[in-house]
Length: 296
Image 1 (cartoon, rainbow, N blue to C red):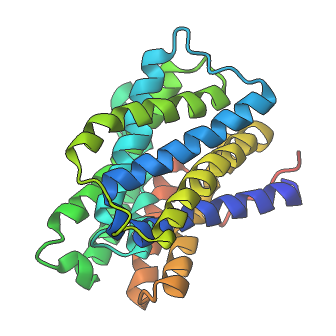
Image 2: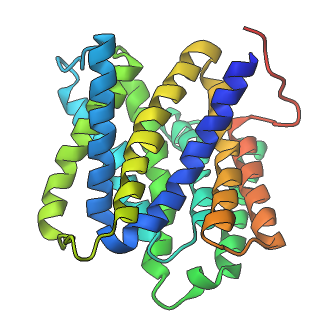
């Protein structure tokens, strides 16, 4: 792995870790659904601009329904779930829970192939669930009487990512990664339209410039730009090394939450995060201690 690839990987972890910071800043004024709609719209327009500059087609023929369903499962639904969870939970906790997505991806893969889990995988599942349980149990916000549904939403969101990864692999294998990212973004926007009609509309009197700036950053930086970096890394260094960003997101999520939201970081936070990342590593077969960058 070249130095530029390592820097891109770090930047990607910082961007995706920062998405929970921006969500926490914007969701109180915009609400979960409208925030996600603005985020997806900004991301879709950014990818439209990039696609036009690269003359990269959407590849709608034969993929239209896949763009729509993948937009729902991989973008609209988990984004709304995490945004709703952010009304009660900290950015640190959300970023750690998000890192369970590869764990669920491998789990669903075993179910689809009807393979029995190995002892390592079972240990990884137990470690991941133990880490989340510890974090929720020791988090005052998560234990509040009105936090049950936000906690449930946060736990369901990475399940969506796990399912979406297999759907994308099985149903969109012939499409270019850029076309999948771009097309699914517009599909997600269409999925959000009914929810927008049922959600309270924010007014200029209740929405400040900071919330709008956070929503724009979510769309352009944490969605559009991040997708570009991720798919470039997948193409240049491979999918497995690119997925190591999973181990960076919680670190940046905790860092941004502590620096900009004054979130309390304790030893329990790092212990819980370590259990979740250990579980993810065991289930996916990735050992960060044994892994070495490969030259390309």
